[in-house]
Image: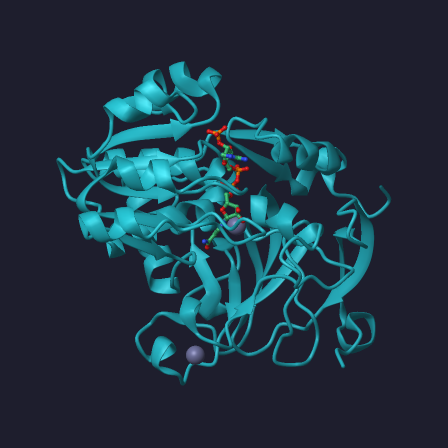
Length: 361
Ligand code: NAP
Ligand code: ZN
Ligand code: ZN
């Protein structure tokens, strides 16, 4: 049985939580643990809204517990550090992404891949070591073990930098791991949302040719002229899709809903790689023959390790990569969720926590 946060934890916290599968968010008083020896406590300034927050708020993956405070693109300023904290001081600009704990003794952890630890603890909606349920960044303060805290470089804006903590690492990691980061390669990005638009930016910074594959023809001009994509395919346009068959070394698929994989596999060259990062609520159909006939590979990727997350943030700061954001007050969050469900955001909502989250609201 999970212990009650109110009983167990001394720090008063305030956020907005989903209380049931409607996913509707409303004000919620809770508490966080005292700053432990290795903990960093920080005042949250901004938090991005990831589509995973929407999946979780509505229990679309069947693993949510309520009340649930979403948010795993969290940035802020350190207010307190534990006696054994080595990397951070009060006043530092920091962030927390998708996870806050792991076992640190399994093979994944030994290889600095805590994100693949079987006991990895998600930033919200997961059981922490002390038995309480973790709560995310649509809230005023955060307490996290320093291992799971990222330093935000000085030149990276906090608001548009926040989405890098999930959207950024989730596309950066597979580009690197699957070797789709070599200059001159051709990579497709499916779905031009929060993840997709930063995938375009990272891939371009790596010297890769990028084609966006989208359902929304009205994103074309911006993708080409503003985000720097080299070409744009409307997935329902069969002539366009046909003309691009066999041209891509890899594809990063960020789509949040059911969609056919066959046309995407067709876009790949011989031995091309289709990497799934989007997490639709139901299984997708995988046509096998086109894989066999081209020795093609379908893989997956789950955000990234802490080491890789810091590397990604530093790479983003060096190449001036941030998310294109719409900053919103907390009381707009339910409307934002509705718009996100309709892919109506250019390209990430970020909540202005410090200026709009008040416990009296
Ligand atoms: P998002 O901003 O909503 O973007 C998803 C995009 O997918 C939309 O903008 C839309 O792009 C496209 N899309 C939506 N519905 C579609 C449909 N029915 N058919 C085809 N395309 C559709 O979401 P996000 O925050 O980028 O997250 C995307 C997915 O990745 C979510 O499922 C999320 O849970 C998952 N995720 C996974 C990880 C991981 O570690 N693997 C981490 C973070 C998020 P167009 O308008 O261009 O078609
Ligand atoms: Zn996310
Ligand atoms: Zn482990």
